[in-house]
Image 1 (cartoon, rainbow, N blue to C red):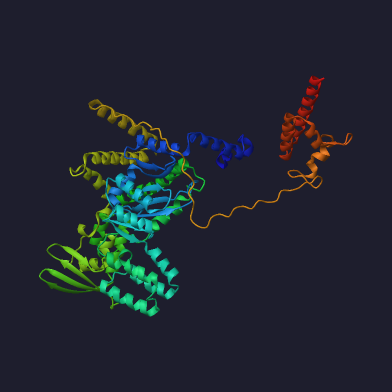
Image 2: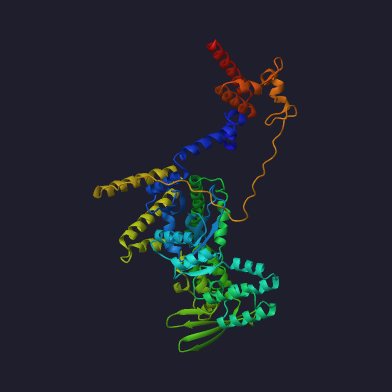
Length: 595
């Protein structure tokens, strides 16, 4: 409304009010969901298949035919999952639609270390059976590929579903939630600070047990049930027991929390399913636009080399994305402050690393000259996918002035997505999956082309001409493919889900106001019918009351007069007077017939 007022020069020139605009928009929304909110939402998803051949959605219904659970993802998300889906984080959020259905978002990191969304699901409840259906459907959408690592907030239903559907996936509990639980269960700030060591530090398993026993003895919590539970499940939250796992730097569900904070600008608790899907897609486009900007920055221009290890620094800038290059550069700068003690036995070099500022802390790096492979006991490369400062210091000690490709994960390379697209023609991939992946790759490439070509008129016209020409050339040798028809969905709108927490209090019935003249209910002295229509309520000349008239009347007259009384009690005085006149006319008419 403010935009229109600005264009017209004021509210008086627009021709309608803000309320008129709101009514018009509400009318349009009702038209879109005339067959039901669930049917409109599913038809919208079905229509996405026409523009995105790799689009996927699946739902199930209750016994009454209402929509229960729904999962969907587009072609770009499915392609991203095949490249970056080795580590997946997911969590719930609430109050994003008018049915109060929890929203489950599956996300991870792309090659720029930016959040990317793999899929989303609206679920009816948070039971184990529901999460099993969600994970099985997600696996079906992602060509039966399981993630290597799944990070959640520690919900027991999620944990059991991961164990059933993804038995070979490492489940990690959110480190932030673990620390918060420590504060709640052991109300001691000093304990919480020391507990962080067990969550984040890469200790030796035997050393972990020794330090744990000392911690328990120090604070006298040997018989605490929460402490016993945490020690039994230490393999799912302590970094000590996950040093050989690749997590892409993800230890918490902060990715999900960031998405929840971002999409609240697009979604609210009064969203219908159709509006929810449309606005969620708008939020997804914002994430995709950030990736396009990062791709451009990584492809064009080179950062300034500032460290003494220019060869290693330049090699990292050449193959890594810009954001990951800054991560490696930080490790290069830290490596310059390390002191190296070297010893060699049969082409195996062992180096002890100590910081100049802290000589007590020591790390050991082993270098195999034959295989040209570095291994550091800190486990940073295995966890993050980039070399740590200790390995870079070892490279400096061995006079290696180039960045070796085996010291970086392929997911952080500039060519991470493009290399995967070219590799989908491998014969090991199933033919149907290969066809879908090719469709998704071509769709993603066309989306990227449209993002660039639509900025200028000349580019748009030229690209469209080339596309039509290419389309005609392809159709000459092959029959044109048929378009996907919209399916008819026989599904009812979902029921409102009962949220967590205490139930809402029932509203107490307030006392109705009485008239100060006749003590009646539903009107005041200003509108009292006794004062406004004294002849109709009580005939003072004959002394005959309205009730006596009703007793002498016929059954039809009693019904009519009773209808008048109901109208009168509902403030409908016009109807009351009109009905009274009709009764009188009816009585006179019957008396005339009787005479």
